[in-house]
Length: 215
Image 1 (cartoon, rainbow, N blue to C red):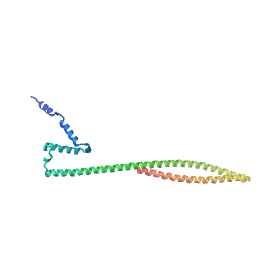
Image 2: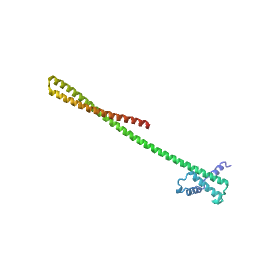
Image 3: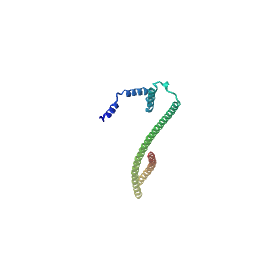
């Protein structure tokens, strides 16, 4: 006669009559998970609640009524061993984390140092190339000046000898002495240029080596 009655009764019986049990569970967890035990994991908390519930339901919260059977002692020893193993594993994990953190810090320092050296080397190369460019421009100008002096001195000397003009000969001689002086300065500049070029080449090689080391 009433085909849906069974479903209605089951639905009614499934309704909670209150949340007192849940609230008691929260209160019990709060008494176990104190501020001094803030690092307690979920597994340990569940174990505490299980033991507390068993004492209440089976032994009326009277711990002296719990029988110390060989099986219970075995379980206690096994639990201690498992707890000790768990502590060792946690300790190893912490050590691994510390080592990884230390290694990452070392890698960061190495990267920063490598970057600093890279920027320093790059600056030296740029300054060296700028100096080389300036020296080469001065050499070119000086070489052109020397060529003109030699040409003028030769013409003056040739004309002076031909005209037997000692003033022109002496002036040609002075010009040639100036040429010799300019030549010495040019040689010094070439030596300086070679020195700077060696430094630039060495720094470029270092820069390439550090680049491949970085990659």
